[in-house]
Image 1: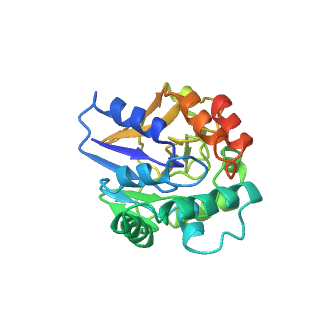
Image 2: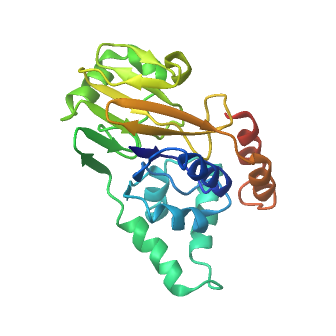
Length: 249
C-alpha cells in the first residue's frame, strides 16, 4: 500500500494530520504529486516533510517559483514571492536554504511506477492543464488524455477536486463511490484531491491510499483555524487565502 498526497500548499497542520491518519494503515511509501508550496504559511516545514517521500512531482507552483509565474493571478503570485523570500531567508542555515532549492529544481514532471502514471496537471500539460468534473463531457479533451496514457491508471492533482474519470465517459466523486473504488480494466484518471487547500466544499484534508486495484479516498480533519491565524498574520498572503480554508473552496 502507498499513499498519494497533492497540493499541500505550505499547510503544515493539514499535512501533519494526514501523516498521522496514515499510521492506521500499512503505508509503505508516500508519493507527492506537486504543489507542496504556495498559498500557505509554512513552506520550509512542508518541504522538509516531502523530501522524505518516494518521489515528489513538479507542480505549477514549484515551476512558478523557479521561473516567472506569468499565468498566476496577483494573489497567487504575491504568495509565491513571499514563499521565495522564506526559502532564501538569510537568518536560516544556508545549507537548508540550498537544499530546498536543490529539491525543487530536481522535481520531475511525470513518474511511472508499475501499472500507474503520476502527474500534477495532466499528460497534455504536466504542470498546468486542469481536468475538471465537467470535462467528462468534453470528448475531444478526454480522448486526448486517455490516448497519451501508456498505463491504465493515471493519478493527478492540481484542481483540488477529487474524483474518478473513466475512458467510458463516467465521472464519480468520492462520496458517490462511498470513498472506495476498484480500478477496472479500462483506463481511468484519478484526482487525489488536496491536502492543504480543498476546493470541493469539504474543508477536510484529502488524500488517497492505493492498495493494488483498490483506491481509498481519505478525508481528515485538521486545525484549519491555526493555519488561518498564521495566514492572517502575513500581509503578503491575505484574508482570502485564509477564508477559503474554512469553507473548502
